[in-house]
Length: 232
Image (cartoon, rainbow, N blue to C red; front, top):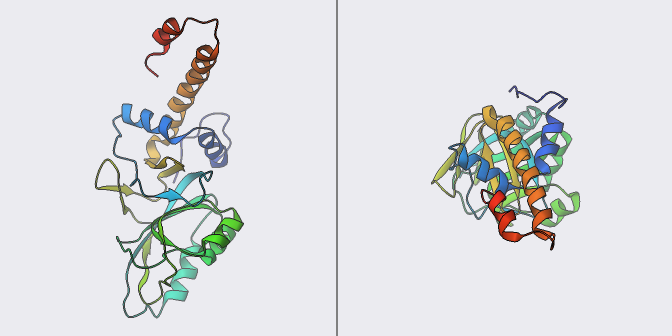
């Protein structure tokens, strides 16, 4: 995947840090104005801790129910993690399963070693206390102590996946689409629009900063300030 990185932004890490200085409400508004209103994931996808933020290109994983046990699970998992590259977000389509934990501490440990900088699990997690101790950014739908082995397994990865949406029933996430999430939710930003969204969001954020300062100034006429910033 190739990003059209702005001049002066040396690599994807710079893009990630710039996104992290923003917030999802602002970025969503920009995408809405650009005709991309359906890129917000389901509202019950929440961060494991409220201050966790994720930003980075998606490494997509699709799983399926596995009632008999995948005999090649260990090898498949090792191959999958071996394909991950820094920096990426582990994004999992869990097939609408609501029974088991699709992610746990060992996934976070293996992923971190391969350069994963966060996870979005459209399903369940376990070992939550251990993941919190790692300070590993993780978004999930629910918690479950139930092991996934012989109940759910990896099907394929680095293919387009389907995640549950908030403004639409589902959101397609492709390998390399830019994931951005905070306490308010998670956005899937099409990779070919990620830099454009970033530029516009940064411009809007700068305007918001000026507006906040003026609204907070008791010497300023609030109606006059509002008139200049009413589009915010």
